[in-house]
Each structure stands twice: as structure tokens, then as C-alpha cells.
Image 1 (cartoon, rainbow, N blue to C red):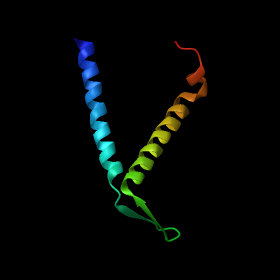
Image 2: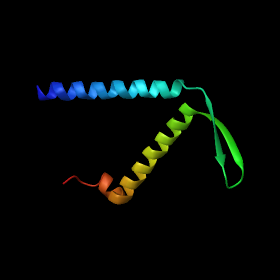
Image 3: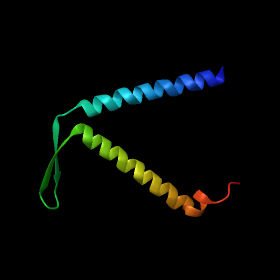
Image 4: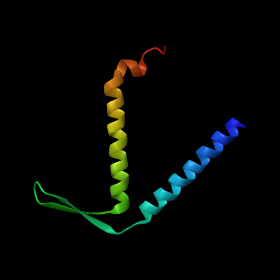
Length: 79
């Protein structure tokens, strides 16, 4: 019964993520990003902006995890 509950919970979370992802990526309204350093302005869709920010967060988390644990900890023997 516990495994059935866990599977159900994972499926519900995946469904919520899929609906949110489709909602964000379906938004084609352009958003202006202004970089104050060089007065650059970019026009990107909100969906692309959210996906890029999520990817950058994922890479930052991976880099932090590798930095804290080190490459030896990643490929070393398990204790």
C-alpha cells in the first residue's frame, strides 16, 4: 500500500509539472530583458526565459553538488 501511495504521488507531481511546463511554454508573449551595463535589450518569450532560468538553476545545483562533494566522491567507492 505504501508503494502504491508513492507511485500515485509521483504521478500527480509529474502531471502538475507537465501542466505548468505546457502553460509556460505556450505563452508566446515577448518579454524585454534590459541589461543595464551596456544598454542591451533582448526580446524573448516568457516560456524561453523560464526554461533557460530552470536550466541555469539545474547547472548551478550540479556545480555546487560537485564542488561540495568533489569528483572523487562522485566516482569513488560507495561506503
